[in-house]
Length: 188
Image 1: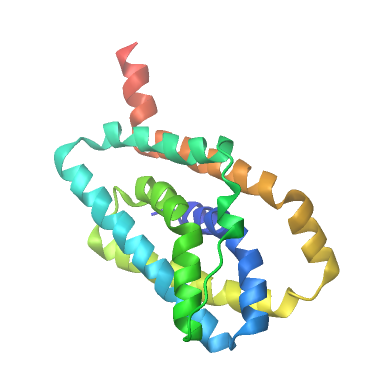
Image 2: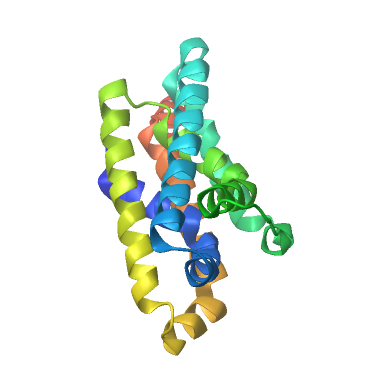
């Protein structure tokens, strides 16, 4: 398990949602936003892991390296519909969860699936704890820096490009880590 790749994956997949977190944290209690966001991450990680394990039962790992194309595709596929989605629910936790799932489900599944496909159950539990810790840390950090104008300006100007670079790097890592590249080199 590569913690740097997990952290990069988490940050790149959630980069666009960090803007939403700023708004959610201004509207709702910190604890409700934190719990809804954490629950959303756990749901999407578990789904990615289960789908990955199902595929791994039928296909060799090096073939699953082809899944690295998903994050690379997302890097070059513009889908701005996520930014326009709004939800209204009575529970602040539920609102945060539904907002997160509606904005980030596709990207999270597409990007975490190839990263988690080769993990064992004990490593997956460690991954959940690691991503859960990052989730808490990010929410607290965003709560602290949400009002700094320079942060908003940088994210507005370069956030999309940074996210795309991260997606490409994650896809390339999946190609390499799965053994796909070495398998293809061995064929030639």
